[in-house]
Image (cartoon, rainbow, N blue to C red; front, top):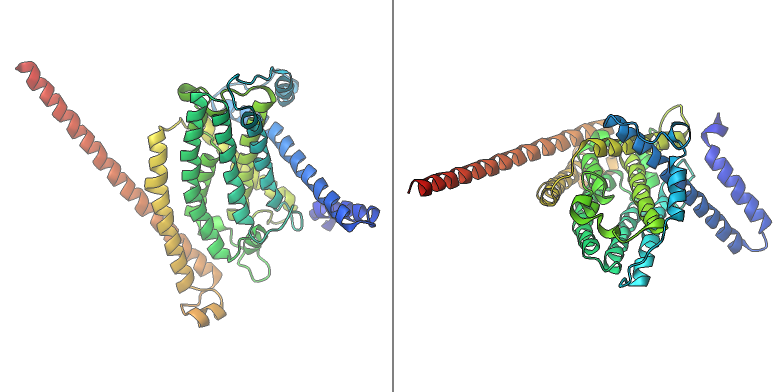
Length: 417
């Protein structure tokens, strides 16, 4: 049973020791080979996930919208991703005559590299992680911002007004939604006291004195806002205004075709899957879980989160761009800021360790009591925020109705005169 539970770690340790024994004459070369092989494995996993997710999403959205989905290429359409890959390889690769060629050609590669680099710190099982950074959360947020540079490169390098407009929308949307994402990740860091993804998972595991409470149970509001921000960060529906065909002709990748377009496509899906893994790590306990092996738990949790992404894409219409920014700056950011301050106060007033209570004061409580207090604070902030938003919307609607009535009265008076 232990061999099945720790299968990934056993295999990775065996391969690493084999390489070190073969290249024992040069420890530096051995470590470089081990790191290179680990990078190849992660890239292969991401690429295969990309192929599988394109098929699964088509089937799920087709089921939601009462359509068939892919069913011609192979049994049940299973070879559709392979057919798409062949099409991308054989499709004509064009470059605009007035494009900035270096910037234009590098943009797809840059966005794919940044998307794949996120997986370097994602823990798939105990001891199975590319690199266990003590600032893993900071690394994820920093790498996630790199795609903005690539999309700006694509918009500018294409020398196309629609592509440039899509790139400008990227700056407004992605940078804007990074603010609530960061604010709500900070709440998790405050609760766990660490920026390491391994430590965050351990805090949600019932072992070594940890409470073993998934953060989504004590921090439902940060989980919800992180999920919304993650959807916006990956430019998925209903936040895919960066590439809305009805408005800006596919946006920043208008001028791309063939494998260059495929790299943008890969970046979108790989980023979305990375957000699903990070959400599972921060709020669902990552690979922690009973009975099943750890790597199965992390895959199941990430699959559940990605299913939510597909569900939203198949049901929700696009929002207007002013509504999208209003949701961020007028609702999510103020609500997240208030919630962050209240979480800080709760952790200060209700510590769970005797050392903290003696040093900083406060009321000593058990981890479960602290979790219940955090849950109550989160729900209170959410309900108050929704009530204030509903009141503001009602006032705005009443003002619009009054303005329409005044205009109608003025038109009637003009017509009678």
